[in-house]
Figure 1 (cartoon, rainbow over the protein chains, first blue to last red):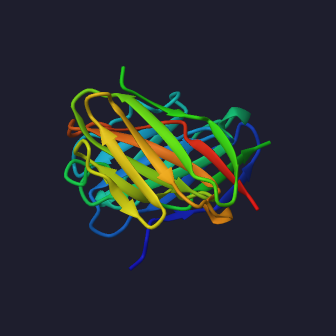
Figure 2: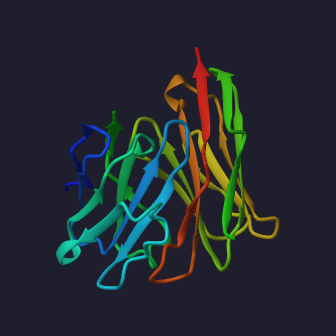
Length: 116
Length: 113
């Protein structure tokens, strides 16, 4: 079956532009996570969606970052007025049920964002 | 504050060596500890541990959890160049409806021929 799909795989943008990153989770997975990974660093939590519950946005670094998940499936992470420090790999992951599966996530291949 | 600390941050070994990677944690309402391998971009699942003292094993890799001392180790025996990767430790808590998974910064393992 299909895994977690992210697009684009690479995105180069100019400082100040807005970008949208897309994540298509595994069908039927109710939990969806976004992480950011800067070069040589670990995974920085950004936002977590669980079913129809309000998302946990506690990891979003500034109000330039937002995310939505439509119909409990596809998610879009939007970064407005990009800055050079936003350059990183943005990883999306899903799981059948965030609580029951106790953290076993299926990751996409990420979007490498480069802000010039 | 929940936190997961991995050590060492990086490690360089020769093929055939045995390595031990460490993960210690302070997480409220512990539920599980997981190890992932990240070779390029997408981390892939290795082990999930929920009980102390029970070793999980897969080929040359094994892992064990100590819930009293709040740590886990990941062992790799007879290392190969294909083991070169970042190894991530993550700890899950029981909170539902909020982020309940905390990652360490990872250990970068390099295996040289």
